[in-house]
Every structure is written in C-alpha cells, then in structure tokens.
Length: 222
Image 1 (tube, helix red, strand yellow):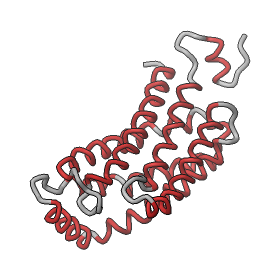
Image 2 (cartoon, helix red, strand yellow):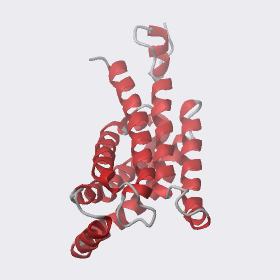
Image 3 (tube, one colour):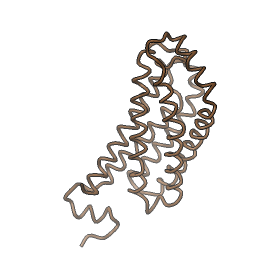
Image 4 (tube, one colour):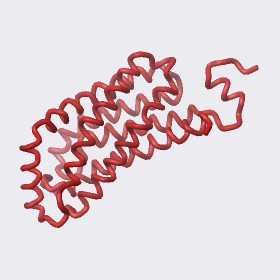
C-alpha cells in the first residue's frame, strides 16, 4: 500500500472518528444514568462502545496529522500530539469501558447506583481521568499553536481546533443556562480535532500525480 493511500485512509479515519466520538459524547446527555436529562439509558452501552472504538481509531490515525506537517510543527507539535494521545488514552478508554459494563436491563436509578459504586471503588480511574483531560487540554492547544506555523489546510485546522476548544470551555457556562441542550466540553474539543482529518486529506497529493507528490515532499519538481 502506498504512502499516499495510507495518508488518505488516516485522514478519513481522523475525520470520521473525531466526529463520531463527538456525537457520542453529545448523546451521553440522554443515555448516561447519572445525567439528570437521561431518557434513553438502554442505548448507553452501544453509545459508549461506539465512542470507545472511535477513540481507539483516533489514537491510531491522529499521528498522521503530525507526520504531514512535521517540518513546520517541530517539537511543540510532537509534544502536543503525545499529550493528546496520552490524554485520550487515560481519560477516554477506561471510562467508556466502565460505562459499557453497566447492565442495560437495570432501571435508571439502579444503573446510577451501580455507577456510583463503581466510581467510588475505582479511585485510580478518577485520577487518570483528571490527568488525561489536562493532557488533552494542553495537547490540543500546543498542537494547534504548532500547526498554525504551516500554511493552508493545517493553519485552518488549527484555528478550527482552537475554536472548538474555546466553545468547549464556554459550554460549561452555557450548559447551566440551557440545561440539557448544550453538549459538554469534550464534545467540542473532539469536533475540533476532526479538522485535522480534512487537513491531512487536502495535503495528500492525488495518487499518480508526480508533480504534486514532489511538492508535498518539499522538493522542486524536475
């Protein structure tokens, strides 16, 4: 499989996985038993399974967004990428597994009680989640700053990611004004990461185009 094909697959994976993870995070408003607006608890397991798969796919594909701009992103971009990946792994994956472990046959009250019991026992999970979320925050900002050094698609992706980051923080306040209508912060941060998938796709030369392939590698075409 050619490098161009792998790059296109990675770009599409970033785009689809980030949008899916964001969508499932938003849907948690009505599926998670501890949410006051829960109405579709029966879908909680499938929602978190889909989010778990999306996060894993994002962990695998997101490095392509650094590789495609490594000459301009530099060390800051690499550190940002590592923090995002570590943060998603610490904060996202274990939490989704716990959510999936709740039996769908439970009532909302029973599921909420079961979740509280799990959470009180898994103290390490709370610590991992806090560290992971902090890592994602620092990583997203660092990666966006590094990506703004590039021209074109990656600069636009960085701006979109920073907007998603800003909206994510604003949602903490909007959620109290419009309860049940505004998805919480991680939804917007994940959605912002989808822009890097678009950037990777736009930066990948079409298969069989030697001139654009040479330009993409930083060399002057013969």
